[in-house]
Amino acid sequence: MNEARIAVSDQAIPFKKPSQSPSESAGRIGLVSLLSIALSLVAVIALKKVLQRKGVISDTPGARISVEDTKRLTPKLTVFLVKVDDIDYVLAQSGDELQLVKHQADEVKEHINES
Image (tube, rainbow, N blue to C red; front, top):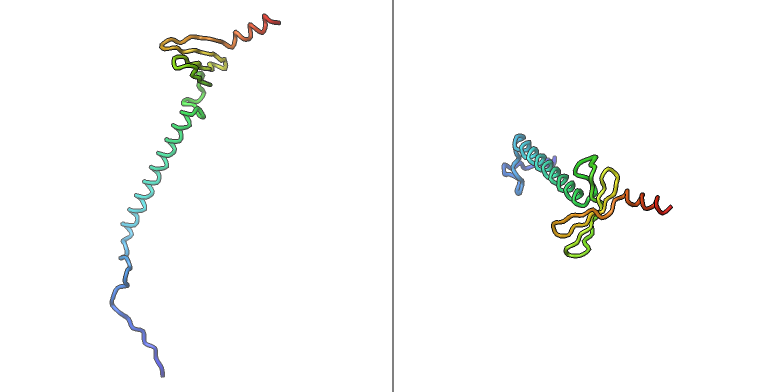
């Protein structure tokens, strides 16, 4: 009879990494999980700051005052469109001075006087 013999060797498999204990693996998994949660929180906070700067979202929900638009006309003159309680105001800033230029109620008065 022809018997096949399997040679069993006591040598380790080349290039095989030694197995880790379960506690080492759990520690690494925990560390990676904490790192990914921390990175996610940083990304959410950074996105919120960027959207607040661009005016997409408000710093405070239900804010009564918001700057709708800003235009720099000259290096010393800037005009702001500000909304307070759904009333529009146009403000002009020149240096340290801030002046009310136009009020939404002024337009209503002008319209009534023209009629």
